[in-house]
Image 1 (cartoon, protein in one colour):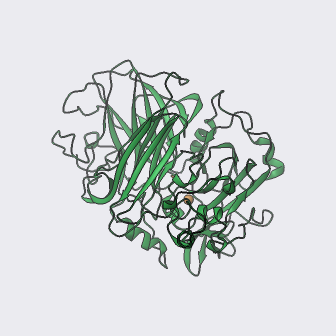
Image 2 (tube, helix red, strand yellow):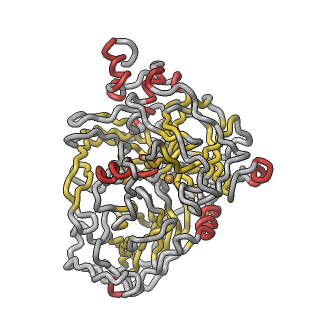
Image 3 (cartoon, rainbow, N blue to C red):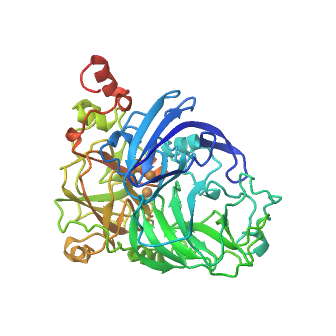
Amino acid sequence: NETHFFKWEVEYMYGAPDCLTNIVMGINGQFPGPTIKAKAGDTVVVDLTNKLLTEGVVIHWHGITQRGTPWADGTASISQCAINPGETFNYTFKVDKAGTYFYHGHYGMQRSAGLYGLLIVDVEEGKEEPFKYDGEFSLLLSDWWHKGVHEQEVGLSANPMTWIGEPQSLLINGKGQYNCSLAAAHNSGSGGLPECNFRGNENDTCAPNILRVKPNKTYRLRVASTTALVSLNLAVRNHKMLMVEADGNYLQKFSVKDFDIYSGETYSVLFKTDQNPRNNYWIYVGVRGREPRTPQGLAILDYQSTTPTKQPTLAPKPTPGWNDYQRSKLFSKKLLAHSESPKPPANHHRRIFLLNTQNRINGYTKWAINNVSLTLPPTPYLGSIKYGINESFDQNSPPDTFDLNTYDIMSPPSNPNAAYGNGVYTLELNNTIDVILQNANMLKAGDSEIHPWHLHGHDFWVLGYGEGKFSSEKDEKKLNLKNPPLRNTVVIFPYGWTAIRFVADNPGVWPFHCHIEPHLHMGMGVVFAEGVDRLGDIPNEALSCGLTAKMLMSGSGGK
Ligand code: C2O
Ligand code: CU
């Protein structure tokens, strides 16, 4: 097994992701950040230097379980202290499972500011995947606002709240087009925008990604979504795709014409270049789950490899209806585990119900889970728990349930008040935990939206989705214990529930939260801790703030 060393510097820089010059977060002068490629079993070492002038930074390795290295999970206030300007933090961790992953900022809303990149893990030498292909491409999907992230954060935290609105552009590998359309020649789909003019220069920062293929081959397309807000649907004109991997786990294969992808999810699909090789074809992503105000994001599948790339002759198709949730659910329910994928334990030790509500606290708009809106403490949990610093955060556990009998999930909360909280769910090491995520009506009547929930440190089995309020009598027997897909991110649909199961076998402190960046900012998450006493010493550099810094100075504990 190899070790891959990287020296990264994070800074704010000028960039033009969608042709309009703006400020982006870059790594070593690149936006998106560099792609990490490794093999299963390898070790990745990133020395991350904070070159931001006035704020901290951390990077989270989304989908990597960090077994034995929970301090490298890259979550500010949870696994480590934010890295101060000028300082360097060492992330060393193993990538133990082949799959498609990504990394991103996990401090404030730095992911929205463009701090992200891909992390691709191949199978180890001599091992084979349950499918074959001749070549591969990766697409990192994101959404982009012209309003700066600091302004977005202030607006969300203000009373009354100023919502961030819809993104100006959708980016594929950091490239989008604003106020012009690549597809203008087709008229429809261009939204009446003029044609983009790249003068044949593919190196324009906002020129589309071009995937150069040969006819009659099979390609693997890895797709990851790190959107701040929107749910997406991806299609390749005239090409069917075979779904084979989700979040680093193999799927029972099935064929699609397009697929939905929520923030925090990754997929691999296979497609054959079996179309007329004299044409090129659009790859297109569009918004679902909220009324779209953003044109489709585009890339080109290029059979011809001529320069400049010839325009595709067929227009991109319209994205499936944004509120056709029936269609979205049908797709989600088709995702099942590959026959060799690990099976879930038959029973659970503990079941936690998490009610998702939009609330108010002293007039401020917040999201809350079982009426608690998460506010992170200044001292990271990992060090506080390991060294028994009880004053760091509320020692009472947040509630395991809400009033299942009387809460009406179909109406706005009758009492919209919630409370701030920073308590932790302490899980018994090696217990099997079920979580039932329960969606509900928002503050506004007749409105409930999608939330993609992401768990750190573990994969979980998705046991099922349902409508309305989860009922143990009626819904229990419908749960899939036979071939549920293993994932690290799953969506809850409007007014519905989603049931997951995982084994709490990874000592550390792990957030479980909505992957919509403004929702997390407004408190939409919980924190799990398990087996922290089993851990060896935590590196000092993860502890050098708040009450753990005081502890280090007084010379007790730490390393
Ligand atoms: Cu990709 Cu805590 O998130
Ligand atoms: Cu959400």
